[in-house]
Amino acid sequence: MSQPPPVRSTSSPPGRPDASMSLLTNVMEHSLDEGYAEAAARQKADGTAGMPRSVRTKLGLAAGLVVAAAVVTLGAANARIAAPVVAKEREGLVERVEAETAGADKLEKDVEVLRTDVGERQRKALEQHGGDQGGLVALLSGATPVEGPGIKLVVDDAKETGSGDAGPRGNSGFSDTGRVRDRDMQRVVNGLWQSGAEAVSINGQRLTMLSAIRAAGDAILVDNKPLVPPYTVLAVGGKDLNTAFNDSADGQYLHVLQESYGIRTSMSGQDMVRLPAAPSLIVRVAQPQTTDAPKGVDGTGKTDKTEKGTS
Image (cartoon, rainbow, N blue to C red):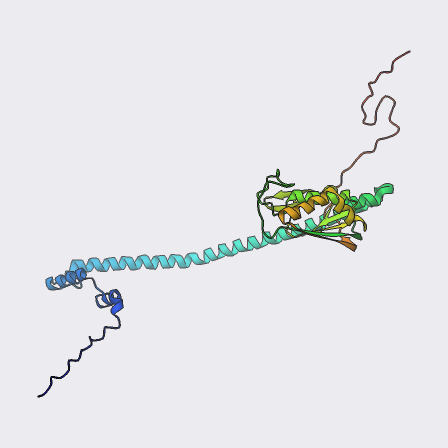
């Protein structure tokens, strides 16, 4: 007795490779919308598809084409005619800009030459008319370069800034206490002067007795010139300047900033420190009091109204 053949399951036919892109396939296979296709079929059936058949319509279409061609041609001609004019005007503007830039550069060089000449004349005047203390006057005014033993102090912002209200800067209004501020540098410089420094510079910029340290936003300005941390302070003042500054109140202030706010500082004694002259001098004129003032007149030229009593 024969047995029926075993039932074998047949696998479903393989799917299309583009089955997952049905939307794209539909767009490619039906590029024309069905509504447009139906309208085109109706026009073809009515005989209205294709070019117009009436003479009037054809003349109107031809006139429209002629007008469009004339407009395009006229626009191209005007653009071609105006192109050289625009190019010439542009060249003229470029030449004017270049001429004005060259003039400004020349004026800037002239100003620099005059500033250097004025600085040299001021230095010579300080050296010649300073009297017995001409050297000291030139030193304090920054008129001459200075070299000698001193210290090198580097002050930098903390690695991680924070905020707080305690400590020496608690009432200063600083929201970022990990950054070096203008008041900090003011105290450092004043502490160096009080500790016996004869000349001080910050980031290579020489300070004088009339120098100003201010802030503009987060930047520190020295004589209106911005500085970038780290701030390298060089001071000439002898071998004992390091110890004197550390023992001063401003040296302790800097130590507190380091301990409380993480401001990084390093100070070392230097056998030889060289500081340049100040880039610009501020000279103020003072009139000495004359010793041969007339009787009854004081040194300011005002009459002495003090009356002497009679016996």
